Image (tube, helix red, strand yellow):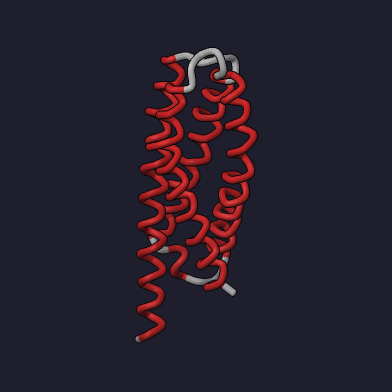
Length: 149
């Protein structure tokens, strides 16, 4: 059961790594091209459509991470896993302390400074998710090598 949880955790993490890079390099920069006239409607549509794509894997990633931490497996007390969970906490804090409020401001209409803050602060999540992906990938590889030995 623990290995199944790990695989689900890794899948959710890497899904979010890919999604975060797509949003960071494509979606958020293109917001500046929408134009002021239709931006509020665009932002509302973006938030409505991105939520169901982002929320379930974020919750799955958090839940499986906590379940793995609470398991009896010593591997999930390894510094790499604990650091990965710390990064996940930072991602959640960043999401609700920075990105969600910035999207709230953009809901009123395009503002170049708010948009620039959204793009720049989202690098925190992009880097944190990438580091998480590498850490949980390394841990999974390490566990696979132990199983083969």
